[in-house]
Length: 151
Image 1: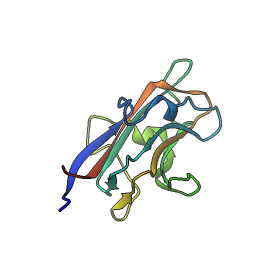
Image 2 (image 1 turned 135 degrees about the vertical axis):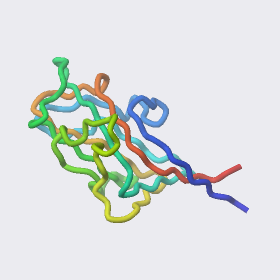
Image 3 (image 1 turned 45 degrees about the vertical axis):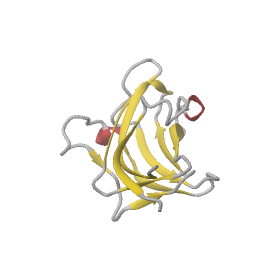
């Protein structure tokens, strides 16, 4: 009998296995750009819940922190063909998501109920700024619940 295990899991930009080089890119100025894109592995699913938190620190290529009033950020879920997407956070001004320490001030997902992200679906962090966003000097973390089969 297959058993399913639920575990808390945090997706971060530092996880190069979860987000390989091919799914990372600098942003294009004045255009919504995928900065990080995670594809749920085969045999897993994630559930995003209204209480899950998100934080990001974003720098441009100058290098300096992006402007609080000019940079916008959103998180979207896409199907495996990337032809359909749903925003689960934002678009919001960057300043609303930059708190990492105080859990009461961290950004919350825009969900009314739990949302399943099936295997091979994508979770993408998409940013629009008036400058070119630097993926390598920016970072984020997103809380999720991961479901997988046990051995």
